[in-house]
Image (cartoon, rainbow, N blue to C red; front, side, top):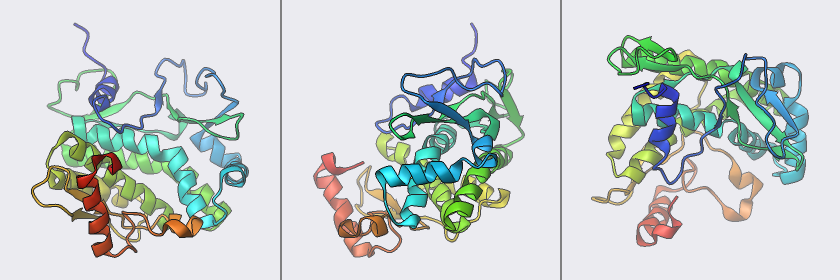
Length: 290
């Protein structure tokens, strides 16, 4: 029996989740220079490193924010990163938590589709390499890169994330003048949340998932991800399987783009008392929960 490729195993592990923003996986391309085959409604594919090096980030940022807002540059910058990097972060973070395997991102294997409607579609990943530990059953697979232990696995995953995201983050910083610590803070916070989310949905121990995310977070910082502060776990309802959420270390500044809505539930600027009241509504009304 042919073993399941390690990247496919990561995708399969995410299938039961309610929230699983995965990238479009295209592993059948002949070389890294080729873009993914056209998808319905795709106008152009931008490769992560080339999009930055060729000066496309600034004009695309302006086109996207002019069409969709917000007008304020701080929330516009973090929303722009969310559009581009949400799926790649989820792939690595949730994949590592659920399977103990880390997809190895690369700037030449991350593509962003620009649509005729004036926005980005789901990013595509065209590389198949996955880091696994020596005892993993997939260690002998051609797509597997074997790490000696969990610490080396985290280091490899983090270094590839930093290498892949740096061209985009630097270009957003250069265009908007939003600080790198704010931009990397979004990536670091999201990495933590994308281990906590699956744990909560599956009824697993939230603190264990948070500690696992923290080790990857440490590796990200060691690899060069600048961050102002670390996110923190926030228990809000005792003895409930989904009674734990978290607070971001870095504000995404959404409130500046939509002042009437105020601070996000996870905002570090929000009062914990108000946060607890809001989160407990999720327990009383599950339809409100993410």
